[in-house]
Image 1 (cartoon, one colour):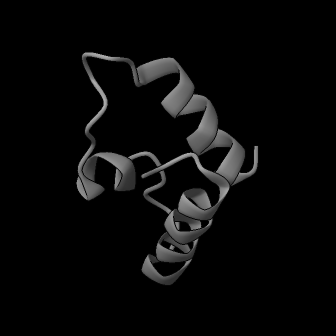
Image 2: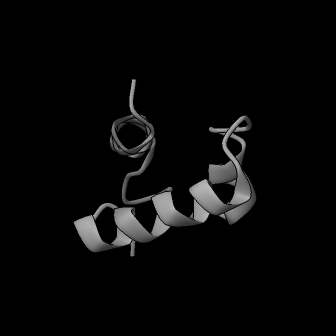
Amino acid sequence: MQPMRFLRDWLEENANNEHCLFSLSDLRSLLPDMSDTAFKTLLSRAVHAGHLL
């Protein structure tokens, strides 16, 4: 599964009105094999796509 789809699906399953704040380390632990540069790019793209604020 592509990282963006994985992140989006995980957020859809885990984010709700009571649990909507995640730290970078929370999100980083989802994709431990991804390089730091690729992870930063993924987060930037997720923000632009509206998956993260």
